[in-house]
Length: 181
Image (cartoon, rainbow, N blue to C red; front, side, top):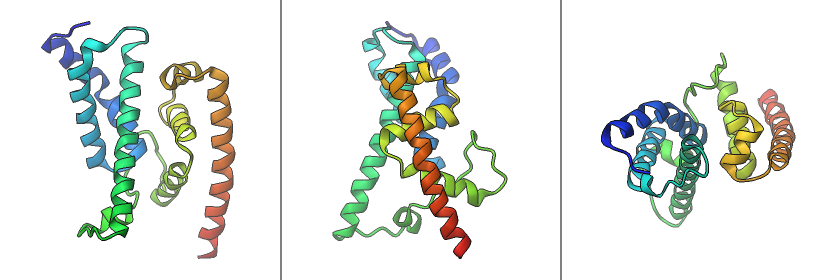
């Protein structure tokens, strides 16, 4: 499959928000989400010739956006570990990794609750987090999620069930801590 410049621009316009929202769901930082979005489209442009049409273009873009977001988080986590051994950042935000953002898919009036929710979502294991974000934030169906994650629909259902159970426990604990303050 080859794309000329105008069709790549159309693809960018059509999927830019999707990629940005996926990235933002993972990193909770506008600048980082913009960087990931740019990286995703650079990769798409470079590798569009390898797209085999075994899945939809949207599914392929989702996979790349998720992988880029996860890679970004892994890189950031390894930088934090390195910090323990001597790296020093002047950026207090970078050191504390505070989630302070407004996600377009989450319309909560209380920013503190929104921050708390995403802190707890970030504590989920990777596959539960991905399934939960795709389902509850991006609004995808279980069959769509199964194609993107390359797992069965029943595996998606299981991941979502465990994610919800873990979130209930963790949110319960967080609200108990919050009430004690």
